[in-house]
Image 1 (cartoon, rainbow over the protein chains, first blue to last red):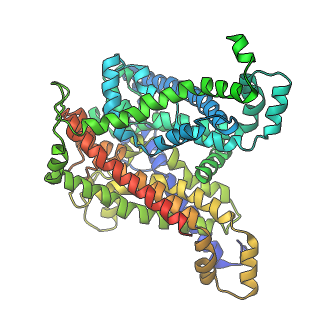
Image 2 (image 1 turned 90 degrees about the vertical axis):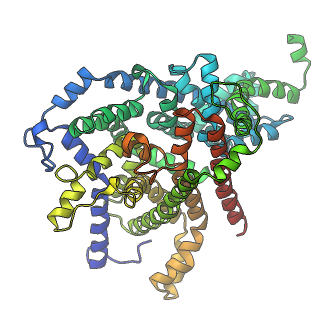
Length: 277
Length: 298
């Protein structure tokens, strides 16, 4: 909506634009301070100027050498990658079946899966903990990731998107003699890639930033994910703010890079799943 | 087996494949989501502490929490996060989206600046903000206050300021998501509505009140629910911004989820913790049901 003003001549509009832009800059100031402080030596920490006088990578070197950040990083990355692949495969398969197959019990299965969306993680962590304890999953990768291998949200999202795939296409493939799995994999799935990419981004980010369950299920520091590791590390280094900011930067910079590279898809994905979900 | 399969009708074959494909997901949802829900409900009726066998004690945990001042403090804290955080974040994000929608110059870039905090790890950002709140000469907020001639503020160290100090980064982190959804909602309003209003000479304020806000109703309701649920479940920030993750000082910032975490995984009082998760579940359910009702009435 533009009200038909010429933005170059409307001072009110210039003022509002400036305020919005300033607000945007304020929004990213925490990142600027975090990164700037991570580049400062111990002597310069109390100096709050944004551009360090003598930038140094010494904090990063210390962090990578003396702490388990590299290990935590790899833990988080592998757990997020495996969960994302699993979610993409099983959520789209279940969404496809619920959308395109007609069979007795379909409605019940769909309602059952949908109802799991109402159950908050916090309510499930006690049984998950007991289950992990009994199965020997405490303090393992599998223990961290098993609750997120399939998601109700993803099944719901994919079911909505498979509605856009014409039934005629699937029937034609069936007449051509393609197996049921190949129809899903080769005919239907390639047509919903926007939904798949949105689901992939959210699942990966969700896993990367997850805190409560990894905090509960991990025990030895070599199994921590980045957020859990950061929390314990920062607790120990409680007054060395340049080290804490370096840890925070290591946890944050990958998501910033991913956002800059995939900005369009991420924002589209937020809108898609926000509006559909 | 093969002969049996080939003797089926198309519909029956489909049903066979449907169940084969659904077997694993269905097993997962039953074992990892539905069964544990029932299990938590059962545990909430026991005195289980992980060491000795569970004893069924009926509603005793619920009676206890009814009489537990810490529970009520935590419950009230949780609602403070919701009742202060949700309206502020919604109004702020609407203002940003409403005006940003009218701008063309660098619109995408400005939107991105607001959105970035939404993607970042809450635990990491909590520590950045915790640093901002430190006393002079470390924390930037106090340095600015002192520079401007005000006195230092205790922020996270004061029972009256700590909750607000944790809410600020929570609002900051969620704002961009709401801006993006509001912008999408604003763009979905057909331009012809505005043109018609302008031809009739209707003022800007009236357009906002009579056209934009009513048509945004579904978007607003969606965001009210999503952000309410997020504030009711606040945990990561409080854990990382308070000393030893205890939700202090003096429980002043401790929300329900942190209380549940402490009860279950520090004190191993599983039964009592489970009863509190049931309360959280019922509150979240109520919020969702109220929204569905509100959507249906129009």
